[in-house]
Image (cartoon, rainbow, N blue to C red; front, top):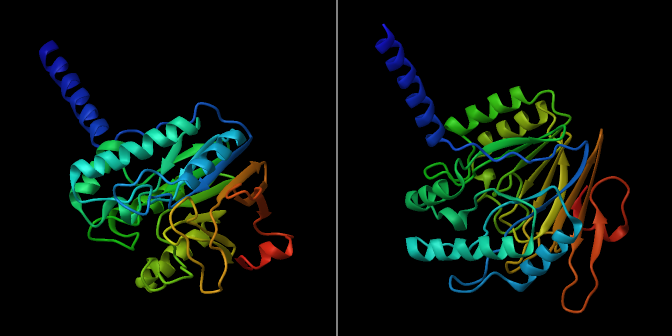
Length: 304
């Protein structure tokens, strides 16, 4: 009887160990304050596969570090990318080393198309590096969801297992005061990528938006387009923040093509967001509020 009991305990432990290995836990922030600031940026990749991380990105990291945020989220395209495993590893190592040398805060990553390039080998590489490519965590009284718009075979969609996971995750997070979502490809692109992001599957995109609206998502941050743009749909604020260092281009409205990052401060029921243009090329840093009462220049940068 004792032997059977020991065998059962061994099997339970083995199953638990395998489950843990299959999906490594996401590291949780050490502190959980009621008031905190986090930062969002994206598309910091170099313009060539053999180039180092851009100077603009390094400047942005320095400014973010001075803010001492609780953490940061990268909306993807942190590297140029390659289907060659050695080059991919070297590029990602350069990104990690650059980020860690200039920014103390932890950086969460929403995988971009330049990382994956529709390659299962690349997808497996990043799963080994960071674990599950869609996941969530709590900080203070807020809930944060990182989605993967680049699942091989489902690019440009949040579907299948990921969608079912998202629905369950949102159900569990119903009590969260604020909910923030991050992914690479925007639901509502505003430049030459129109028709090539999550909007390539309008029904799926609309269903995802409805899910966000029903669950009162505070903001959805995306990258992919190398610009800044913000708009609100059915109470959900959508922000494109792709000015992390890669070459820039404007929206169809002729605006938004500048390097930047987003600083978000949460305190109780209040959330304040601002877009920050770093000090570059001899020009001082500038910042503009996102949403609410805002100055004239910021108004031209947003679809509100």
